[in-house]
Length: 447
Image (tube, rainbow, N blue to C red; front, side):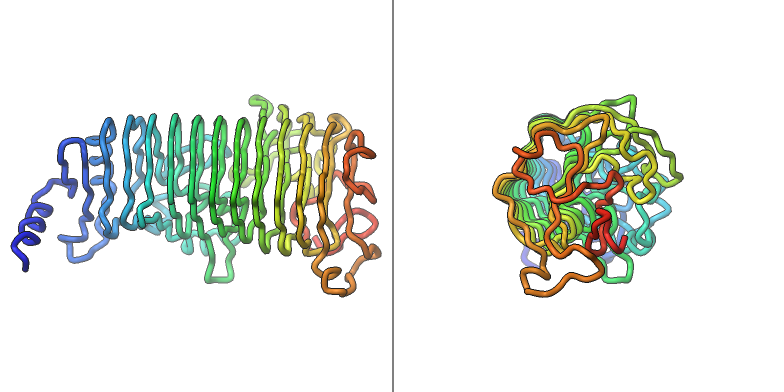
């Protein structure tokens, strides 16, 4: 062995908890290097590195495999740079994570890693987060919001946060979540949640935000089984651009209006330059109904919330084989049962879909529904051109009495001047999940 390499190896093995501390820089090496490759938990080392160098310092994950078998809480960082050059492989000990992951409050959800601070830079320099999500997808069996199923990483209570080239492979649940933060920038985000079994990747959102202000997401590729990017309640001044979404349910405001005690204000949001492929939904706004509904599953109860969605633009979207390209729904979670639909008191106004093109999977391009209690003013389309896949191929529709592209609308104020070519009424209980063409009832023939 080269003498210099031998001294470096000896130095590393003598360092407590595998953190090499040089001044304000902490360099991490995995425990497996001296445990014959065994998956020894590196979380204590990681925690030590952030405790030591999280203020006015730098934390470096070397180009190695790190095993994360227990929760991480690296918050209250200050003036800290993080360099991820290796793989963070989170364990598949489902009973542990379901009982130990950290609460994020929203919808009773939890996270495997709580991260945050002020003036923090996170650089994914060839490294990546591996959630080993396949075990979770199999255990979840296509159910929604399995209790204790953790988000991959939550960025909490952060100000002036910059995240570049973060790569999340096989997230356990939602991949990235920004909570109670401001002045946040994500660039070059990559998320891939795919399943190799009969069970899908339900609830593998790519990027979600809640109670946060002044966020930029630029240049992202997200392959997932739910929302590509979602602005949850009280997300304001949000700008998303240059995004590729594959699978899942597209780009959305919502869901909002879940909790009566906390009104949701989603203001000043622009989504632009987005390509959505093979998705159930495209560009939409989804709110809960106006009456509270209780169901037993984790996080899937609520309704009755108020608030305001205002000044939202979806611009320059390409849709490719999308089930429902455009939607405004005020009864998204009880749509299939019609419980409490047409009761929403959450106001939606000044929302624009501009330069939207591509193909719908079925004969519907848009469903725009606002409640009787809160009709929607200034909802507009500009240069929207959606054609069904069948029509683009010169093929007939099936199981429907309507053989043209449908734009259905209800309680859209100023409809004649909206630019929306409304040609039938939108039912209050029209679901975001459709599996067939729509007929003259306004409902999908297969739901």
